[in-house]
Length: 309
Ligand SMILES: Nc1ncnc2c1ncn2[C@@H]1O[C@H](COP(=O)(O)OP(=O)(O)O)[C@@H](O)[C@H]1O
Ligand SMILES: [Mg+2]
Image (cartoon, rainbow, N blue to C red; front, side, top):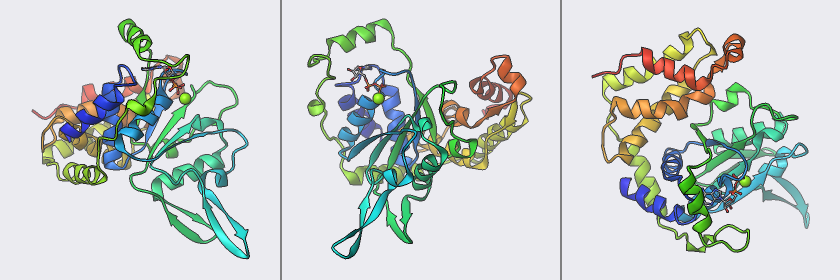
């Protein structure tokens, strides 16, 4: 998987500057069948990154802009009468990499349709079940919480995302490097240079390797201790769920493989903890008033649980 990641990273980096680590995390999510929340200011290459990743993985990419008037069927599809027959017309969710842009601009009903598809990997319409494609990776972008007129995702739905990854502004030298890419006017560099570097069976093989990554009793206990700790912190109203523990271990296994190991170390768990846990914690209002963040809470949990040798 290490070699796979290096190949994908090299392709994506032809058009996206300075996000190599993020590319590896996205690949890890794709391999374990997780979905990702992407947060970042506009113009930080979220769309470009998703697009380039799909090309490198040699899979189909679709982008859906979520809007207040969007209906669940705009996402999942509809059944229509055609020539006397009922025909299913699949919606954009039937793809491999779906960029769900600004997911919190759409009302809960449509959000729920997406989250359900993510979870079930299938869509039921008019009593018929339609399986989604594999791989299926949702990258959902979010506006900042305080954005007016948005519908923040409920905690129960945030919990279904494997990672929350953040794209910030890059260092000055990287911003200069962006300008040095071959642009066409104001259009981004052509994605034609991004080649497909993965065969579908390689993703499947990577998943099997990740699932077979050894986990000692100490490491499993560490994962659970961390997750349970988040429920005890005085700043936290809602801590991480048992599902979060499953996600944390899967992510740690993928990180182990990305480092070329066939066993998980406590450091893999530590590295996975921030992107896996931070979006699932709900802080007490007092803590929030003091500008304490979910990330601080994850840090506090990490600091108070002893790392096994
Ligand atoms: N890290 C980056 N590497 C290369 N180009 C970038 C980068 N960040 C921004 N850009 C440029 O800015 C444009 C805006 O990116 P886009 O993917 O549309 O942003 P977002 O979806 O985050 O709003 C890109 O098409 C590209 O031209
Ligand atoms: Mg965009």
